[in-house]
Structures are given as C-alpha cells and as structure tokens.
Amino acid sequence: MVIHRKTLSLLAIGVFAIITTAANINKQSRYKNLKILPQDITQRNMDSIMNAYCSALHVSCDFCHIPAKKNMFSFTPASDTLDFSLDGEMKENARRMIRITMDINTRYFYFDSTIKPIYLNVVNCNTCHRGNAFPMEK
Image: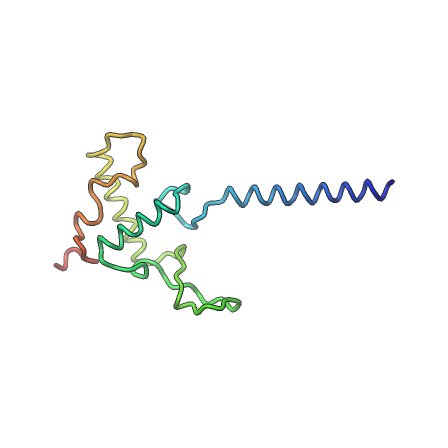
C-alpha cells in the first residue's frame, strides 16, 4: 500500500512537470529576437512581410540574415542555412528603415486603430527602394 502511494505520487509529480513544461513551451514565441515585428505574428504574416522586403529591394534573405554557425551535430553545412535570429549590419539597417516607415504611416496615414503599425502599408520599402537594394545608387 505504501509503495503504491509512492508510485502514484511520483507519477503525479512527473505528469505535473510534463504539463508545466509543455505549457511554457507553447507560450514562447515561434520567432527569436523580434525587436520590431510583433511577438504574436503569424507565419503567414511573417512570410508576407519578408517577401515584400525581398521584392521591394530585389534581394534574397541572405542580404540581411547571417549564415548559421556550424553545429557539430548538424548534418547540413552552415553555408546552406541562415540563422534568422542573428543580428548583422544590414538587419539593423532594415530595422531602422522599418521604424521610419512605421513612423510615417502612423503619423500621417493611421486611421484604423485596430491595425498594428507594422501592418500599415501606405508608405513601404518600395516607396523609396523601387527594386534597388540601395535606393540612392540609381
């Protein structure tokens, strides 16, 4: 009887630990190191925004994002993957540009307060870049 109670107690503690861990994992954001984009952004919105940036600047993801560091347990070479959470110079420049467009859109075109400023799209990257990575060059 005592052994049965100990077993049940240990089982209950184990189940509680698993449930607590699972609940904490679900609370974490899918994306790491988001400083401007909302933490609750959906994958669809993230992909849409990133594709719009790539299109407006006529660049690929590696223009702003840094190759992943080689992990000794990884089967893919580091050069084949990007670590989207790492910060680089171009990513910081992109963040400054995003803040500028958000500021312009919220100051002059923000009529629907139910929309988050990052999703306002009156002034966007293409307004200045027009398909060029560096708009002042052409």
